[in-house]
Length: 188
Image (cartoon, rainbow, N blue to C red; front, side, top):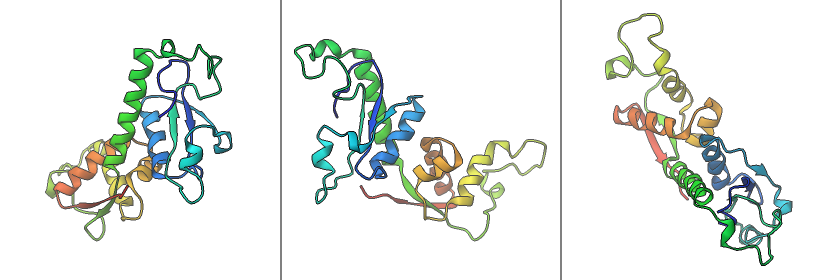
């Protein structure tokens, strides 16, 4: 956490490799909040990520900040004080971090437990009556089932299916409660 309280802009500094679980969770959280952070290259690093992501340490650390260090005029001057921090700026950052943590906690590798497409109607998950538009409400559920082979986590599936991780997590939990799917948790 660095530079989290102003209201100017959003900034994203990836980990050294840019593909850690933390990197993959931050961006969907931003999307959920309609945040389009400025993406910096790890070559533009300058804070603690230098040490955390250094070879031999290689912690999966990325940063979602407001104004990136060294990009705002007050940086490392006597004007770089708490007057830059606003309740709104800090509150929005806390919300973004909370959403990121929620994505990390919900993430898992869903896997269908049936051979072929499961019969959803007998489980009360699909209309037993065929009528125009009756399947529209289950499109995302059926797409999740189609790709839930245990090889991709929810973050990757949400990106591919163009939906929120939270939506897929809820569907995965529903399908698990009907013994259609299992969910192997992702170790941190």
